[in-house]
Length: 308
Image 1 (cartoon, one colour):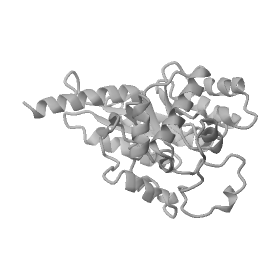
Image 2 (cartoon, helix red, strand yellow):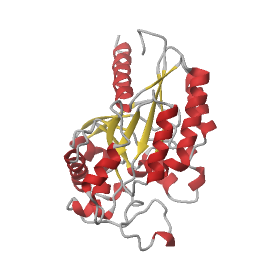
Image 3 (cartoon, helix red, strand yellow):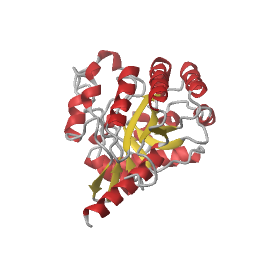
Image 4 (cartoon, helix red, strand yellow):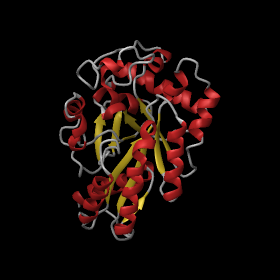
């Protein structure tokens, strides 16, 4: 509960770095975002797979990633189990199950498969290796990570959650509502998400998850990512949170993918313009780490209130 000031909607805007490529057009899209919204920090979920591609030049990769980061941004970890990353970490690659649930001929023959494989297909020990290896690669190339994590395709089931907690991650942002995923409703992913997050909706607020390695603070990705959500839907999602302010802070999350920034970042830019125009006094833009700090304090305060 916010005792010191009027309640606010905390907005985190995140970027999922998929690990495929970093194109010039997507880099230009970031510049457009920064020009319009210089006050909005980004939470980058970085993927170490860029460094594992055949022929990758680590110095060039690091420079291209670094060019898109600002000092106020947060750097978390994101993992899709690309074959290059998995095998570099000393883990046996698995090609199934995929998020599609069907064969997609256009994906056959990919030089580096695995992006569409569920992270939950790996054992806890195997995924811990992927987390430890990814962290070491990113940090060796100059990227100091926070304690925040997002699973590829939002599929952070029990094995993934225990593995990341073993490696010191205390915040996860993989829970989401499949109401946003109608454009891919014919594939397996929405059902896979529902099986892992059956009780999560777009208004679900931060909550604690117990794992054998300790508790995780779950910060739901309440508005999914711009590939699936229009500017009007993102702005409406935030407006709904403002309307539900009733003596307590609310937490919302929107974002986009680095790999499709050129196509979808205009939606985020437009949505934030609408939000600033309508709700400037009721919202605060911050990193996920800052939101998590406030949310954890709220949870602790509420627990104290419950025991009085």
